[in-house]
Amino acid sequence: MAWWHGCWILEYTKIWRIMNAIRIQEFNDINERMMCYFEKDGIWYLYVPECGLSNLMKHEVTEHRDGTITVTPSIRVFGHKDGKPTEVHGYLEAGQWRAC
Image (tube, rainbow, N blue to C red; front, side):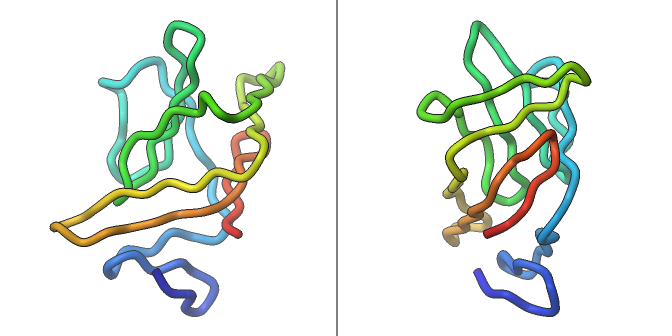
């Protein structure tokens, strides 16, 4: 992962420093090009493009009236693409992702 002109680069994929994550109803609704989150059986999950799905069990999740969530502490997701490791680290605040 490298920083380049305001974007995180993961194996030639841009993860914008600030981007909106979308709330979805369930796993089957994941859009592989967008950061998505959902809750199932009391556990929150976050999907990060090029990294995959991560549960937020070790985080505090606050749900806001508008349906967005804030997660603390920061989130670090490890994954892989085409056999190469990927990593994203940042904050989700009121549904908006902010990279570290």
